Amino acid sequence: MSLRTHKDIVILGAGPAGMSAALFLAQQGIPCTIIERKTFPRSKTCGDALSGKVFDVLKQIDTNILQEFSRSANAIGCWGIKFIAPNGTEASIPFQQAFNTHPGTLPSGFIMKRVHFDHYLYEKCLQSNLITLKTETEYTEVQRTGIGYQILTSYGEMIDTKLILCADGAQSKFAREQGQIHMEAEHFSGSIRGYFKNVSGFEKGNFIELYFLKGVLPGYFWIFPLPNGEANIGLGLRSDYISKDKVNLKKLLYEIIESHPEIRQRLQGAEMVGTLEGFGIPLGSKVRKISGDHFMLLGDAASLVDPFTGEGIGNAVFSGKIAAKIAQEALSQFKFEASFLNSYDQAIYKQLGDELKLGRKLQNLSVYPWLMNFMIGKARNNTEFKRTLTAMFENVDLRAKFRDPRFYLKLLFNKA
Image (cartoon, rainbow, N blue to C red; front, top):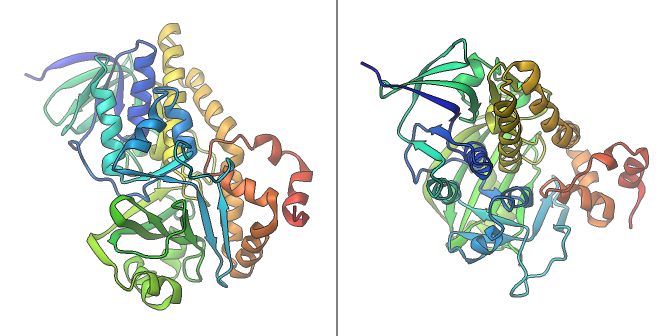
């Protein structure tokens, strides 16, 4: 006989979106159960950069998080971004706060392997008696019921729940079947990454590096520094271009490493650690319905990755925070229908919508190498452009700017 239980809220997936939602629920005194198919610590294929947006959200759970990361041997502070155009033009742009690596000054962002970042959140969840973590557990079947959903797990447990927070990533079965979120090549990116040691030439301040190269547009090749002398090196390209040009991402990555003069020089004494890993990125380049009767979609399951920057973790933890707020309201008013939970969609796109639209526009512009040369050239001297690009990696509200026509004139013509 199957064990049958009732849980008000079940979270599918223990990634940044799911665990941040659980932690915000616990902060409100609301219990939840997380179902995660893997065990911890577990690796996750990613670029490993944690933007200021990540920490601005998580500081609302733990005010000491920046101090904890600055002391961690598994994280390094990141002070800015380096953009490299197809013609080799470089623009190194510090984040909005003054670029200062003086002892005691904390950066707004960090770089940390996902195996360590996710485990950090996992341990935070373990500290709460309101969060039940069911790891090494899969949901094998999900059915609608009169009160919400019934979930059958790989251990034969039946869980009846009023509300599902679906946060199990880009390949989510629930998001596909219940949320009708399907992979569309124009709104999806294929990526590949590897870990390397002994990579040389990093700038002071551990700037992340984005190379907009012919053959990887719309997309980019990246080099992100990591602790212990390692680097995360990879590339991403929109899936419709991968299909159209029959691109082999692994072959393309090696071709760039071998043929690009600067990259080849920096990797001369480098050695790959482990193997190359591929992963899909669901882009937030169109507005989707991300809630319905008795459910909300979070993070990658809701396709919230910035189309231009590839920023996904910040938007994921933000969606977790908003989902927890709407879940609390749903429980208190006993309203779980789609019309009520639509306030989640509204809150997400109110905050992230203009930013995602700009990311889509920049992604479309990045198809043209000459235009990327122009934009990155402008970024060297145009203060407004610098602030806009770095703000996309921080938790800076750009909505008012995007609605002011003068903002676009400043981007194109101002030098100061």
